[in-house]
Image (cartoon, rainbow, N blue to C red; front, side, top):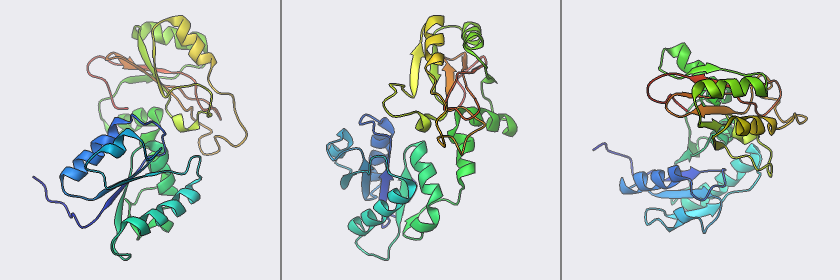
Length: 251
């Protein structure tokens, strides 16, 4: 059993407003059972995870906050939960958008919070599902063969080659516009559904993709046979495809 420094509280942070995010509960239980004080910034004080006996406190995060606003909020949370104002806390981001936000404001959050030394560009290599496949290929790690379609017809052809149903997964879901009704992951059971979902890919919005103009915000993942991945200039998503025999790849 590894030993942990139980003097350092952990603050779990999730901007994704999904009350049934299983990773949050898993992190709370794992850290709490190890004797580490755990606090969480989630969507609501009434979130199901707030009922865990391993959680010291739950606070609603600032909805739609900028990275700077999130950093200010977390510094206030640190002052509230730390017994010693000079002791550090461990910040644990639980989704991609939170990890990116904390990386952007790392200079402000340290040394109050313990955060890894990683840049936003490094995080995007694994947070973006299309870039993740490229990173795995560059490192020689097993991953699904990836192809990126340029239109609905090509997307349908790739889905047909992979074998329906496929799992459609946006590679950068944090770029999807609020209220668009697009889930980060969907099961697509027919070629008609493939075309329909592709057609719903968000149109370019001014400034929305300034940090990702060369890549789409979506990845389409096929069952155990492969993964669909999209890419597009200054757009949050179009579908692409990747396929490989054997177990599913990363992402």
